[in-house]
Image (cartoon, rainbow, N blue to C red; front, side):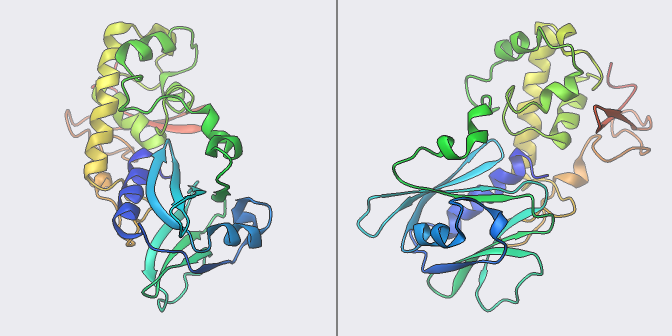
Length: 282
């Protein structure tokens, strides 16, 4: 599943190529991809002749602010990529991908395609009289962004105090911090020297501070690398991310640790895999 760096990479790419161009029409090729309105026809009607002012990212969600031809608010386009979703900016003449679910047509024979093999992703059109979180209700459950002042070392330490679950599972809780998933939880725990099975409540202020720094460090590095290359992630031009080739522990079970040479271990925590170095992490 794309995590914060991958979604941020897509967001930045969309801001470079899609702004201030009217949506001339579209095609919904799989109706259940549209979460709101219930009718695909209404979804396309809401977007027609609107332009995107700016794309924003909130956690793993993408939000495009829309305006109409009179420069008035025209609502929002919301996207959640889920497991295998991709937003691709292509020429309309390019052959359709086999898993293309939604097409939005722009001028100059360009289009934005939503491609999704597993079909778990969703798109919303939020009318101008509504706030996105009233329709995209998952937004209501998100904690602070990792780079916001609200996500401080003190906040992290205090939030972990009463949690009896492993720290790896706590980091996957989007209500604790928005946008972190399996990959970057593993990576941040390695950089902080903490094992994924460590009970969250036993992490004191000092270790929480190290973890806080590690989270920001690994996310910054991955964003700068364009995200992680895994089976389905592509940016808006169809290009893979580069972080995967320098990952410390994620998906490296059995390979030597890049720091000490010890074999990277893999375990299951609440049904999710976790990777760690038994020597570097305590």
